[in-house]
Image (cartoon, rainbow, N blue to C red; front, side, top):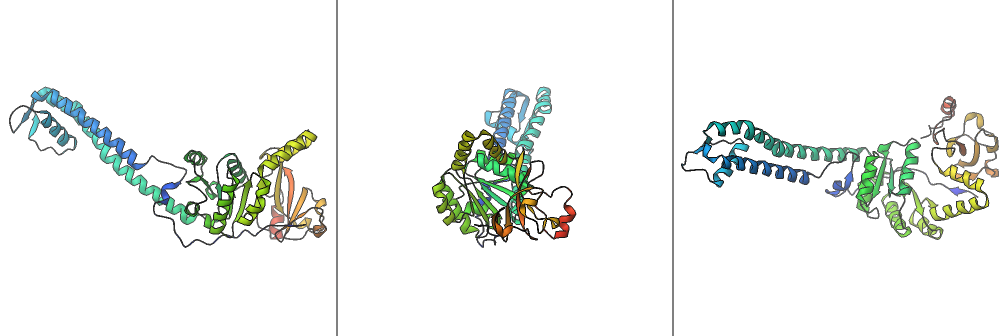
Length: 376
């Protein structure tokens, strides 16, 4: 009996564009402190410098002369500090004693420079940084196509990303969506673009450009959440391959009806491995090896080579467990695939040192001759 595999065709772009403020929830790997917070800090620093100058001038108020006459008041000290730090310098209040002038040279002038750097220079830098970040997001959006969206960056999500990256998927072709800012911060630290938000909302998935994605991986903590996210993803992109992690096997039909192409039952799978390990510890160890990325054995998919055409899957150098023909998956012993044909692909078990989607050593020429596209 065969299992259908839907074709992987890129989805068409949605005519509805994201909200103008939606970019605020998109976090590229290089993050920055919110501009308002940065400006607020600089304003507080500037006010602190102003108060320091006022204190210095007021303590030495007898060393200053006011053209209006009379001694300097606290208001005069604030006035002088303000026009001095902002380099306005009206000249109506001036230092006249040597001590006051020395204080201006050694203390107030450095404070004036610090004031300008803290307030004016940093404000311009913050505004430039925000504009640059908005430009980076717009540029990222315009270039992102046929990528992978991973919903949820917990244990399963991180493992899925690790496997994708190990299989040769570029880091800039993976987008993570999670409602927790801490999870997105972790994704950013790994070099991934992250979207903060609830993936069951259409606008959140649009920020991840899910309408242009080739694959959508959903690793929600609850099955009802997984159903909602699957429905939203499928409505937004009818063509993407949607892979969903489900906790209970009884919810698989509901997820299939919601649009999931592949469902992976986490709790049942763990239970089976535990049961098999009890009956046969060696069998449990082999299954654990197959599920552990980068060590021991790996399950891989590759094209049939020209010298393998006409052979049985049992005759391959690799250990073949299934054959993919015309988007249908057949077990290796199925009589339909008793002879391999050009264009077939085989699911094999091989050493982990050979990347799952990489060409086997010495087969580059054969792949070219067969006309098969490179594995990626």
